[in-house]
Length: 193
Image (tube, rainbow, N blue to C red; front, side, top):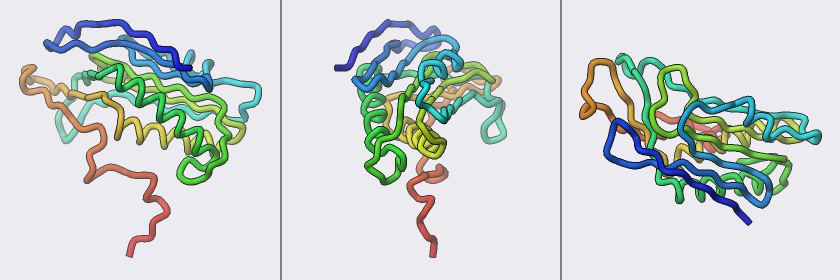
């Protein structure tokens, strides 16, 4: 049984509403969309277990430039009910993929957490935290990377990039996973001819 909660928040820079919320899975995994700084230490504690020999953590942060332009902040919006279902399903898929998230059916993940920030995220602050615990490092690393790439591909979360000296109408909505330039870990073992 999944549990879900939500809170509405008005974004001060636009007319749209984003909603904070969270969901927990039967397996004990947790996903959350929230406003304000993400506490990566608390998220790490959430996935800790005496059975874990490894915890892999990814922190995605706002960088100060893109394409030679100075970035002042990122803004995230989400369709929260669907995004939370997507995040929950991705964590379930990661468990099914287990020790070899890109192929095996062996489950060796202990706990997963995905927390994504909504609203404005200033330069240097964290916009996403993914944490995975497992008895062994390989499974934790692979699941963490797999979850990140799948969140970027599938979650109903959108990113707007704000540049120095530009008006709100000039801020650019960006794809989370531009197909032409992105790395796809599914292709790591493909041989190029």
